[in-house]
Structure formats: C-alpha cells, structure tokens
Image (cartoon, rainbow, N blue to C red; front, side, top):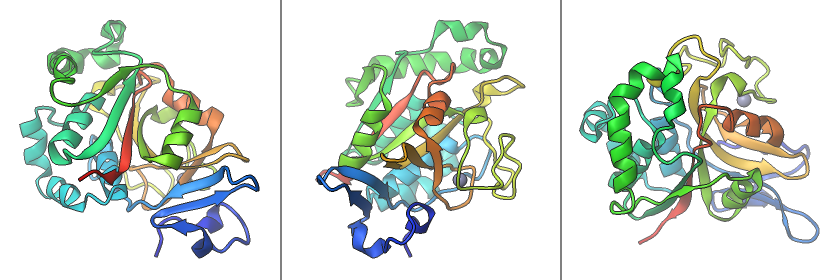
Length: 271
Ligand SMILES: [Zn+2]
C-alpha cells in the first residue's frame, strides 16, 4: 500500500491514476506541476539523536538504494563510531555517510555557513558540543571536494526545493523543531507530546538545553503549489506525511541555528 495517501491532500481523486512509478503527480491544465509527492518508506528514529540518520535512510529508500539502507540500519552504532560523529551528527556528517554508503547516488549540500559559525560559540546550547565537534566538522568541510562531496554556500528559496522534489528527489532539511507543525496531525503540538509521538522527540546533543533552537532534520517529499504547502516526513513521528505552508516551513528551516542546511538527494542511483 502506498505510504502516501492522496485522501490527505485532494478529495475525490483516485490515487492510482496519478502514480508515475514511486511518484504521485498532478499537473495543471498547462501541464505544469501542481501537486507532487514521493512515495517513501518511513523511518522513525529510535533514539533522541538519530533524526538526521533516519532522514538519510528515508532518502535512500526514496532512491531505492535498499542495500545501503539495510547495512546502515544493521550496523548503526558501529557506523556512528567509525564515521567519527558518534551521537552528534552535523549535516556534513550526513553527506559523508551518503558518500560512503551510496557512492553512486547524486546529492549536494547547501548551507549559508561553510564550517562552524563562530557566533554559535557564544550560545550556551552550542558550546559544550562545539568544542568536541568543531575540529571534525571543519576538517570534513575542507576535505569535502576531494571526497566528492559537493558543498555550496548559498541561500535556497523554497521554489528550488519544490523544483528538486518534482524533477529529482527528496531533500533533507535541518529545521528548528520548535517551529515545526503539521496541518494533518491533529494531535501534533509544539511540545511534541501528542499521541503521534513515541517519546523520541529529537534533541541533537549540540542543541541540548532549554534554548529556543532545537535542531531537527526532516525529509521534504512533496508539495502542493496551488495551496502553497510542503509535504514532509518527520522521523519523530510514526509513518505519515506531514504538511506545512511554504511560509511556516521557511521559518522553521531558516531559523537561527540551522545555517539553512539542506541536502538535495537524487531519487535515482546512477550506475
Ligand atoms: Zn503530520
């Protein structure tokens, strides 16, 4: 059964007519994309630090790179240690993980900060972990090109995310969890304590504390242009597609602390 149900989106439309492989698509009268949603097997995070890893697993699922997904899942703890990030994953770490386990899968990382933003040093919630992580993170940024990891310093408008989802694949998005919401999950609330959660709400180690910023990765999988909505999968929750307006999604992903980090992942594994 498709994990994406169009009943959540559009009334009275038969879903089967609109599936093109794993992608649900409705075009407007001019043939331009109107609604698109990628069918992705959900991964719910198991701990309080693995939202980024869960998004990588979902992106691999979207690209049908199931062998990589399985081997990461089976050896999770060992991989976290070998990769050097332990339980504190930065976006650059997720990129290296993708490169190491799905070397033929095209992806690119966009951010407004190459390396570690020095201004975070002044933030209580970043400080402890920063000291430990910053050397690894800086090294990985410096080595990125040589390692075949594309990192682009740029701000990305939501239209580019929409375009990527339509044309190419999914998008791993670093958000401020305190600004995430969903128009589909009636019990979802800002504290994440509704009946959709499993006490796995994510506190990335580097953002511990009672700060206003709580880093959390989600996977953008679809959009509705007429209604100006983004569809995304939240690894905190059980299998479901969540929905936010473009404006609210932008607020969550562009919040201070996220560096506006995005990983654009293809849904086709290039042989
Ligand atoms: Zn939801």
